[in-house]
Length: 350
Image 1: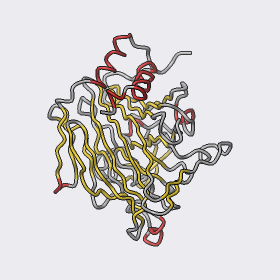
Image 2: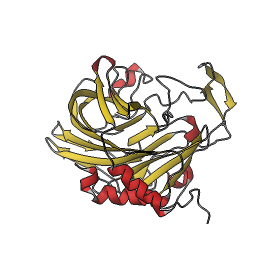
Image 3: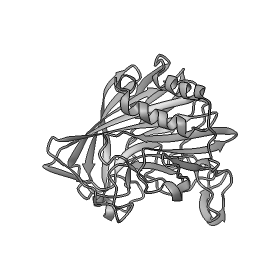
């Protein structure tokens, strides 16, 4: 059966490995405390920023660019662009959060939550930068409830690499319990995610609300599928939202063409993560998420997943985020990345 992706020559696989293990000399990490962000530059050009604004409930990497300088993340809610949906204002850039920690929702919190509902939600607050070492950024954050009670301490390390058409981010997130018992419930709302430019959406052939070219919200519901061409694919060869959503898998990719540029993103799970292989919370409207702790929420026949930490205990999640341009990724490339990520400590875990 003909696949969405063309098989590349062996030289392409070599290029992937070179991109992941290549020189880090062109990467600079620059804190900007006044703007509440930390910029990551490749060869002097902005790749992404770790942002922690006071008016957003979770730190994020935003915006995110390809090596060609193309913005792949949705602008809303910070900078709405033409055709974007005004939905899920808690979806910003690339982030990590979860929808059930001791019954508190750290995933869905935003300015859109009514005041009387806010006690059901938590926030992840940047605490400090732990270190910047070469192409690695380590930050600390606090998971607090509406009243400021600390549930978890987070320490996340971002390792940036890649060259040519490839950009690679390894995210290692360590969560440490600050209460006698901290339990992660079984929910689909999580956990490592992108919210993407409209080209990565699947066409719906349905009316929707969106921003016009002047940045005004079109209140009437119109058809607006212009440019949408996103295609999901997972390690089992399943495609589109209906194929990948809720399925356990080693990796998922999402590919689309934007202004003639062929772009692929991917989220790769690590075999040592709790709940591996993770389930895909990947939606056709531009939410691309991988969830290690949801199980029964995706399929009622799955056993209930529950992770409990005692005071001082920690759990670690490791994921690889891949951005490829000038050609879509192939299954061979993705499988190579998954294998290297899970065995080559000298490449990814220095």
